[in-house]
Length: 321
Image 1: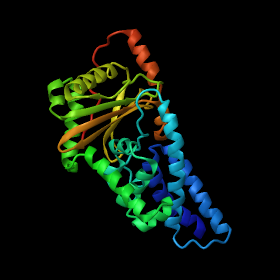
Image 2: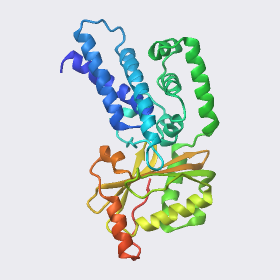
Image 3: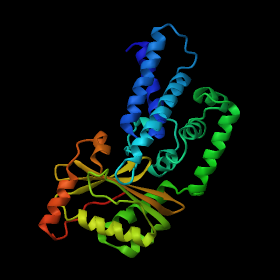
């Protein structure tokens, strides 16, 4: 491997970590990173002296991501149903998105919240609060004055703090809550499930118009608990369906697999202040392909509906620490 190839390999994880948080899409983030690294390569070929390759690639990545966000938002306005980010599995040691980050900045709940910021606010907040860039550096990256950058950061931070819980939950508490959540969901324990949920818990499903999902987010512990129990009851009727606990976007989650071990959906839960504050279910196959082979969940559901009630399936093996 040449020195340049080593440099590009070193720059890739940080660029992807930034691009993914900006865009909430693995494929779009990979495209942005590829283009950013190509520009580094071209600049070096042209004989440019790059004082800080990290700052150079961060600048290119941020500007490309801002441009992509503007066009992506127009597409998301036409999206069928609720839009959720593409999930990533984060329990691997070589996971590129966990480079220089806090787990909270990676959660699906935070990525959805970042969607409510302008592209520039999103970039400034991530660069400063997650990736530790100073305001003078950020001003050069986004092409604004330092005063403007500070104002953008203040507004973005205030917006996020108003909508995120003040107290986080330890990993041990998180895993214990996740175990109880999945067990209660499997056994249809409505009261037990409600006890784990925040009063304003949100349940969001993303089917992209390709797989049945909630048309809009639900709020409130009773409505959410009842919907989760009913949905799980429907899923466990499907022959051969199993569940594999994983860490998704830095928090508890699970993969739903068909009889051929193909992915048909994911579930991620966001825990804070000792309660489950949001539940995200993603069954849009286009958002799952980067995780492995994808099955036909819509076809499974149709076949189950046509077949009528089935006996309860054996335990799926819900979350176990």
